[in-house]
Amino acid sequence: MKKRNFSGLLLAGVIGLVGLLCNSLSRADEVLLYDGKKVTGTIRSVDSKVLKIEAGKDLQEISLFDVTSYKFLEPALPQNMSQLLIDGEKPSYSAGPRTAKVKLRKGLQRFTLLYYHSVGLAKLQIQMSGPGMKKAEVPQEQLFRVNTEVREIPAREFRLDAEGYRLPVKIEKPEKYIAYRLMEWSHPVSVKSVHDLKAVPVKKYGASPRLALLSRRSAINFGIVYEGLIQIPQDGEYTFAVETDKNSKAKLYLGAYPSELYKQAKRKQSSGWKVTFSQSGMFSGTLGEWKKTGVRFQIPVAEKEINLILKPGAIHELWKIQEDKKKSKTVDRKGESKTEDSAYVTTQDGNIHRVSGEVVGVNDQSLLFQYQGQQREVNLDRVVGLVLHKNRVKPESNLALQSLMTLIGNTQIPGVVKLDGGNTASITMPWGDQFSINKDYLESVKTVNARSVSLVEIQPDSVTQVPFFYQQYPYQVNKSLTGQPLKIGTQSFSNGLCVHARTVLVYQLGKNFERFQTTPGLQAETGKLGNVAVKVIADGKTLFENPEFTSATKLQSLDLDVTGRETLSLVVDFGKDQDVGDRFVWGAPKLIRAVPKDLAANQKQANQK
Image 1 (cartoon, rainbow, N blue to C red):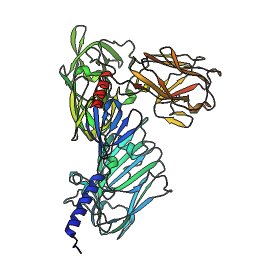
Image 2: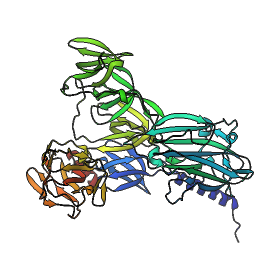
Image 3: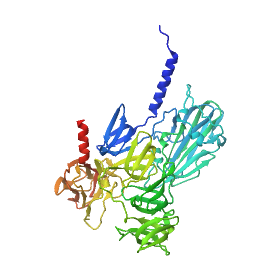
Image 4: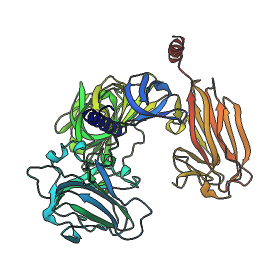
């Protein structure tokens, strides 16, 4: 009988454990294709034309033209690193405290508690008990701070021993108090899970001596993330209990910082400027220097602020963020110039006056503005907004293939992404400006003018709305005429158009598309009311027609050929019952673009190789 090599077996076991750990921490990036299919794996590289993703053992090359969007997902942590002890989001819990038991070794144990509340009187109570401890609020003298030293502890250090006890972390001089982040939001922002909470900007950072609700709050949407260390006096099994009101949810984690909260937005901007680009995209930030060579902004991205330098011609509009919204005034933009810059300035009597000319620059205190042949200075405190037309960068093509990057903190930047291994993404904006950013700060990347183009993102060339009586209902995007979610029968749509008879929407296609796809039907909230005549017309040719569309009409999706067509018209006309309940939805309307000639040639060459 051969002798077993126990040292070899042990080494193999260690290697296997390391491999398992690496697999547990591997990413599952997600690529959404134009036909609705998803590819998950690890995105290895991206350039202006091709995305490469490692899915299982295969490295797939996907034309960016076929990609609707993609995002980098955080790695999931094994449970022995980050343990969800109490899940207050589960609907299966009965009323009362949520409790859980866990075996802990003596020493400092890291925890994360997140809590979010909607309306009514808020409630949050945390208690623990264990060997030598009666059930009560966690004693203040056992609570310590998560500081830089704690944050630098690798995730692999948070683990369980062979007996199932969670091991403590080693800190030389722990600091008193626990850290917290306070977040607030208002309509239309909605927080229904921790995944929503992580994208809400932080209003306040602080420290608390107690693990409890900071104050009695009511009738406000807010969330709190607590991070700290609990000093466990002796080895044993401990019980934790968390109780909230019915309008609140809470989760308690032990061990490494939970991956659900990896990305956290910077605190909300209460001052600064809201900026839109000359092409798609927008951000909020602090305005720095403004010269002819470039404009510098500081923008919040995840947990920090970065400098963004732009050509002046890249900027379309800047509007000052009003700290007190009650005192903000509506700006009358009727008659605004389409060729010159416009400066909206507060006058001595408190009104807002528009001046046309050219923005020259901004110094520490003043706007430099060319007006009637002279350069004048306007105190920056008086400037409400700027609209730039004089030297704006015009897009070379409205159908150019590019991307729209959404960063953590809701900044949206257009351009071309280049990622070649590593963690740094380089972004080249349409006007030539460039900057680099950690790919983990990319919330998502959307491909603009790819094969699939949503109709909700295209401005109609013309809109004709004729009310039956005198009440006119403007068409709505991604919501019903009453502001409700779009719904046909039992099927809901996150995007779509809602119109009232009679409405005709006309779109310019420019012979760039092959298919038009949508699911049409009456908005569910109309009940059995509603009777409309529906047509889809391309260049005068009727592609689809139903002269009597009602709530009883069978739900079906349309896939229509629009190859070589210049215009597309969506017609919803009066039916047999005048206009009672004639609220119609074009659900998930999208155009499928023809493959550009240069891309088609490249694909043909690739297939021949």
